[in-house]
Length: 78
Image (cartoon, rainbow, N blue to C red; front, side, top):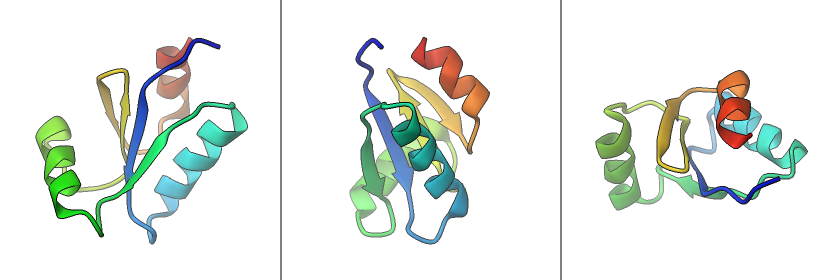
């Protein structure tokens, strides 16, 4: 599988964040997990990228997805 730049903006209490991270792990996709509840600057970065306050926000090679969308993840990771 090609290397991808994957960032997961998440919070510890978000079940869909856990689903997304578990999904990437199951596919062997390396990702950076950013806890926006602990890093205000990264939270602001997430909002700038997505226009959304909710998590998870997933950045795959500059493509922004909001929420747990495994079919879309797969399309971008091919």
